Image (tube, rainbow, N blue to C red; front, side, top):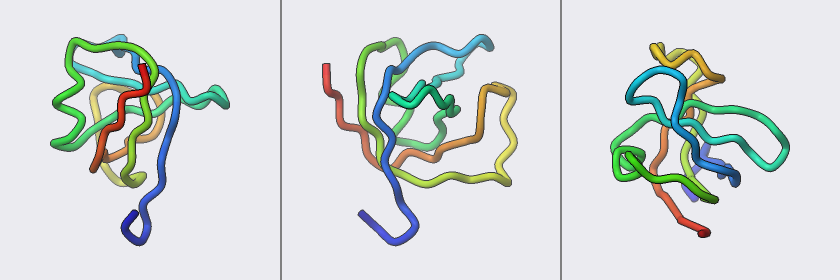
Length: 77
């Protein structure tokens, strides 16, 4: 992992707004996914692990938790 990166493990779900992807972590936290790597997840669901970084300054129309900019996706299911 690069400096400042972290990983989230949980369930990938569609957001309440169109085109939004959300991960609900095993701890119950919700994050909106953003970034090029997250585009590959469109239309999918299931358990995943994503690597990347939080971006508290990024605005999103999804409004489902903080924005997590994905740099790598590891599907678990």
